[in-house]
Image 1: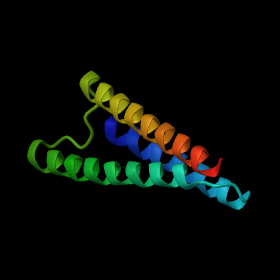
Image 2 (image 1 turned 30 degrees about the horizontal axis):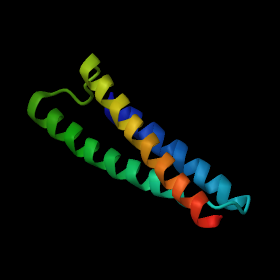
Image 3 (image 1 turned 120 degrees about the vertical axis):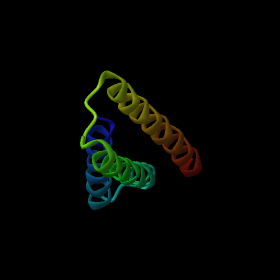
Image 4 (image 1 turned 135 degrees about the horizontal axis):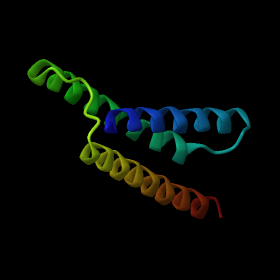
Length: 92
């Protein structure tokens, strides 16, 4: 579950960053957060493949894995907020 949540968030942040760049707005915080999420998604992909090869289950859809996904998304939101505050302060 955390794999799917991370990939979804990475796609969302990448799309928002691309849209902001096309509109001529600064998107550094969005882009950095998207890259962090893509890195996490790659890590979870490797973990999912390893679990599949060892246990035969590709995705873990348990409650604990969903909570881990929520924690990952909360950390990504905190990263974005910190980067955005830094971006705004640098522009002022």
